[in-house]
Length: 106
Length: 292
Image 1 (cartoon, chains in turn blue, cyan):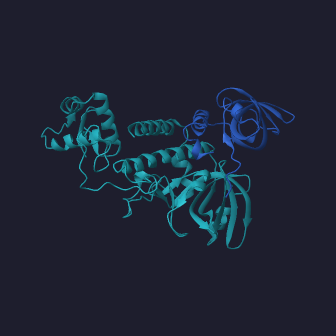
Image 2 (image 1 turned 120 degrees about the vertical axis):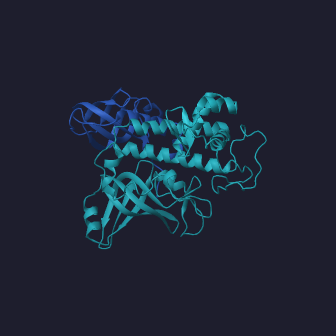
Image 3 (image 1 turned 180 degrees about the vertical axis):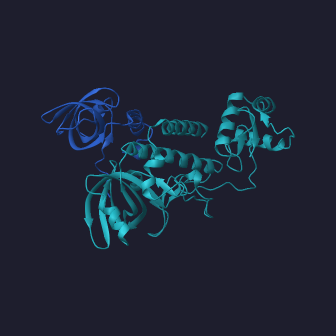
């Protein structure tokens, strides 16, 4: 059993708190060129995702990777969540998981 | 203590609203796992507490982090405890890694983002084999299982593993973990706060003795003998005393406020709590209540 390397639930607003750390987020891909994707976070901000292969545009993609800067993530694992996803609940979860219920996640 | 309970209740209602507002349909999403609503998934649905006054809920949504912090109440055969609640069966959602298939079992590691836990699914019949063929590495799965400790290492003996097909199930599961955590915390604190002298209140909740005298000011008393909050107890007592009214309309909130000399907001909050717990019900409208 290992809890030494958690992936933190983040939206764009929370990424700056975890630079250099492992994070997980869901984004909607709007553009994808040669391994670098431009995408919208669940809190409606623009993020750059590196290391992402060609994925269907406008699909929701979960990315697990290292937060490189305030608005970019280097993807290690990605999962295509399809064309519909409840971004509101996910965004609320990000806030809860980094707020009063941090102890359940980190 | 009052502030803690209030903030917990607020958090619980906030998380509950998220459940109701979500597009995710839990009924259909969970139908593949072989567990229906007949199997309780939260504390409120579970059967009465066993003699040791600790509840054993049916199926508890947890994170690997929570499991890592769970303590064992006794020897290796005893249940794990989270928030003073005995864990029996748990459910997790995460990514499957290191899947190894053998004749008798399939082992794998489940990573839910908070940590990794080893899981084993015993293969007893064709159905088990078929179910495990449907899941593979790097795939999101929901696991239902039983927590075990083997040589001091916590592991999960899975009795159902199925792929996640609706990805809203992932955030839903984690919100469910928070929701369940809050419910059990409120429940445990509700039991223990009547007995502040007990040292490890979260580990060993003790119901207060039936002959314990109530505080002189019942409104200020946080919890009464039966675990009800002060105002809830007053409201219940009043409804009970006037339950024989022939008109069947029940008691109006204004009457409760007037007779108990309490603000109407507090009365309404108490009525909502009691109604949610099934202790009372509204009659002709949302302002008239009777004891269930």
